[in-house]
Image 1 (cartoon, rainbow, N blue to C red):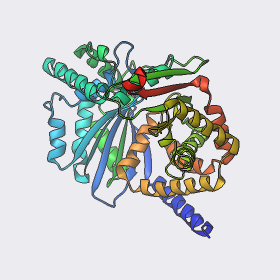
Image 2 (image 1 turned 120 degrees about the vertical axis):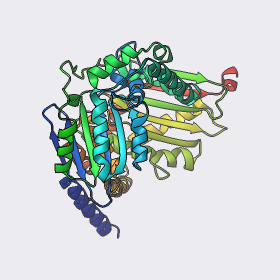
Image 3 (image 1 turned 120 degrees about the horizontal axis):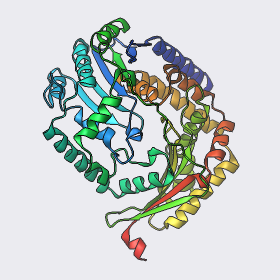
Image 4 (image 1 turned 45 degrees about the vertical axis):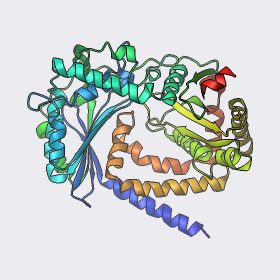
Length: 444
């Protein structure tokens, strides 16, 4: 009885996606700046994003956290703007702004009325090549970043364990280093470090401008050429070639005990392939695998570990497909109070083995695809989310075509594809198992 509706939903999603694709255009300025325009005139607002193809994995060795530190310093003014004035102007014009740093990108965002688009484009172009970092500002902002590390990482046993787990997973690749940086290296960062990083990587030929909302390709091209066009490209921009991982030959384990822990848990993270341009099928299968195993109350882990014979308060799986290099697939289990972590790990391993033996439930896979189709329709209505999906993808080695093809790639995944990805992915020698313990558990 559900098939006609499912077919109609699929056709509607396909038509929506096709309509959205028609409204997305891309071009490149002579100085190398790539521009993506997503036209949507349903509301008089725009989202303006500038993405730089540089993140924490591009930090020079020994200077971890510099990409994130520079993100903070980018709000400290130019020859034309006083420190903090960028954000003040955005707010005074009724807009909102933010920024973020990841392993592979640094992004700066504003959402503002469409008749104020030129204001934010002009200011972004200004700080792309004209940042001023005073002696007072760099010291004060370094203290802010150190305090951010203290509050987000050092005050969180779970975050501390996450750092140790990731550092153990990557034997050689810079993804092993936390985005925010190691404290002892943050404390040594200087104004000169920030300026050198800025002058090398913050350039039009290393950036992508994404504008979504109530505008046109022609208007964005005019504004981009006016404000970004005169900027010189970087002549010594390095290739994005990073240290590669050697073969992983043995599983690793890390454990952290902390008196602040109230709920122990176990997680295991596997090295996994990322989404690659023109070859996204394996990543799509891993995306489906994460949903099948840990996507809510109907998931395999929920049924096997939380409901049938409860040994877990919660259990799940996740896959971080958007990355430039090899990424991660993770599973976790939070045991009930009467179950030890050793018992929980054994049950988690058994659940994985059972899944591989029993195979994929075709009806469950079909339900997940229907949910993804529905979420794709909602995603097309989210101006900021849509713009972000293009920016994150393009700075991670994908193309506009890859972004638009992704829903169809997901739809094409079969049960056999998922099992093949699971058999290849669940290899203990490419994993780190991490446990978070209370101090009482360690003393027993």
